[in-house]
Amino acid sequence: METNIISELITFIEHAPTAFHAVAELKEILKQEGFEELKESEKWKVKPGKRYYVTRNNSSIIAVKAGKELDNYSFHVTASHSDSPAFKLKENAEIEVAKKYTVLNTEGYGGMICQTWFDRPLSLAGRVMVKNGERIETRLVKVDRDLLMIPSLAIHMDRKVNEGRAVNKQIDMLPVLSGSVKEQGEVRSLVAEELGLKDTDIYGMDLFLYNRMGAVRWGSNREFIGCPRLDDLQSAFALTKAFTESTPAEYINICAVFDNEEVGSGSRQGALSNFLPDVLERICLSYGMTKEEQICARSRSFLLSADNAHAVHPNHPEKSDDEFPVVLNGGVVIKYNASQRYTTTGMTGGVFGSLCEKNDIKTQLFVNRADMPGGSTLGNLLSHSFSVPMVDIGLPQLAMHSAVETAGCEDVETMIEAIQAFYESEICQIKDGMWRI
Image (cartoon, one colour):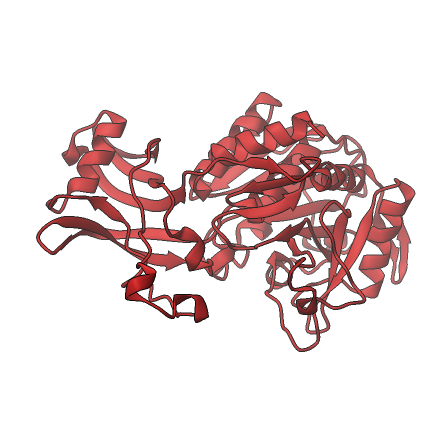
């Protein structure tokens, strides 16, 4: 199965080695669709029928598409995240080893599977703060060549490596930069050269290691995609694609992509911040809504939190609940959890499931084994500041948080169809326990 959607997804992910690059790519998609940029530091005047986007920290983005008939409006919101587990470079990162090698000092960002980062070509990407006259501006950088590698320890020096060995991130995960001794500042010089600048022009850097491996299609029918950063760029891409192609009428569509989900979302650009509440309030203020009218609008709203979901592992089916066999290419996953790590309830899951059934969209249900707690998502974090009915959904995936993750090709299109149906539906809570779909 060869589709333009998969080709677009692959291009998007390969151009997005960091959250900063992902948001830059999303901005370009929105600009091409005629979206106007709003600045948080400037006054807003959001108009019916218009399209806008706003960024924070250049690593989170919220896009807005307003309907034309907004006398009694609500918000249709989707959320995903732009970051993935990786290794972040520390300041003055160059370390001399044995008077011969130079390795780089890093720290883990998020919960990656460390073993998958060994013995593969890596490089550096991120953002740098650059002096431009009297101003400091942000520049993106992606060193587009095989620059680094983290060599495994030979089995002859670690005979029990296949019996399970803890990885020490401060010792085992430092990438080799050079077979010679480099002075501190070598990375800064390398980045400056990449951008055509002087070393002294750079005042700060947020750099990450990224996997140089490109996406691959595999399987007997090429039905799978293996790729870095599928969690959660796959959802961010699908949501944005559906968002740009949808046409709201009596409501306001919102597409939010947040940074720092992998480290708890507790930053000024994360899902726990005031970013989404501020955007929604400023939209309401543009329409002259009172505080009570804003609360009414929220009460009629609905949010889909989209993060990838665990498929049954072919070699370890015992890790999944037998009654909920989530599979690749099986459709959009609706996720439930009794402890509310996922926000789906019987009511909200029923509403979304009914919407998908109405539009002939495949869905499957996910529940963790009772003896194996799963991770949380954006949904329950967003509910702290934007308390509306929510559903946690996702795309089924294998090897989550590996340097190379696997997903089903058909599921991308299914997710786009589901999100577009949501954005174009009249889904709305009209009375407690009663919904219009």
